[in-house]
Image 1 (cartoon, helix red, strand yellow):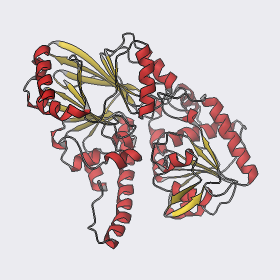
Image 2: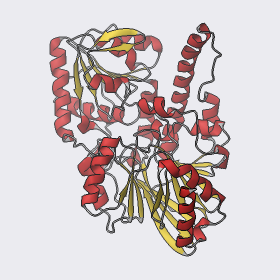
Image 3: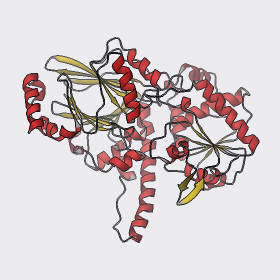
Image 4: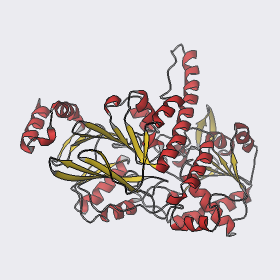
Length: 503
């Protein structure tokens, strides 16, 4: 077995890790690059032939983990996509929305290209690609061991990050030797509304682990929620609106649950809350469908007859006309709109109409990737360009990291230390370089053997050899040319690798 790292290697987005074993190729996620990652790495090229992929084992529905599956299909993939039931439903909504955004952006880009005398280009994928790709999805329950082929089986356990999100535990049997590989994907923050805390894996021989907040600590969730209530109250006193750029799937539903709790318990006056995102509306319906995955507190509310995701002053806008009408509201409204990083969708219109107003507040409740509009605002820009127009940043800017769906440094450390047996190797992915460096130093100090791969690096379990970026093409060519690398004596394999590097 060998593992090749492509997406989310030395960056946050675009999760994609390729496992090669026997004659099978399995992807762990197939996500889309976002922000600066998209600009530097691009979503148009795969470093493997999609036709050669037999399975995609998908951890959850967020676009940076699932977003290139329709493109994988477009380029020839016809295998199976395995995920939890809730992830399947969320992907149907999210990937359709992604295709709509890609078409819109492509039309705008082509108009500019034609004016410049250039040929039009195709979008990454279209709605029909999504529809075809979704036919390849197959649902799997938590804690159910699935044998994909002889010598390879896996199961999902709850990652507590998003409805249906999963930690993937893989058992590989090679030549009568059993090896356990665990892929954490995104680990949830402690005490996220609606969701259970992440489950612990008892052990792993090799661990592929996220590191998004490997260098940071969150404020306690309750303190951040109290802060949100105060922001709303103070903003309304100033005569402004509260604009919350929020991920339509996950963060929006958690916010609704929180606001419902505060309003029903008279901790917050009844305020009009507008969810301006068709995807968020559909996702909320899916959340209600799969409430069996909710935590104990939310389950009690449902069993008592209460709908924790709805209250009297909550309004879902559907049409473009309804969305545009919100821009006429000058004060006293909470507007939750996608996208969470302000890269596309209706949120850009709400920022255009409120960001320049000092009486308003903009509240960020999730991770902002480098290079995104959201990150630019959070980092203190005095003005930003929206739809070609320079908009002053005069509104109060708040970033509530305690409401993040990702575990912080302490949460990540607690999770890995919850294993009864330390992994032989920890491979850090899904984090920027500073976060990974900081978390690696912490794990090194505790006796873990840690590796941070670059794009294209190759890890061979049991051989303890990593192909660094400068030599990965030589190593990849060698390994692909060997008929049965797993059965080869380690000393012989290492000799071939050394010869390849020096050639």
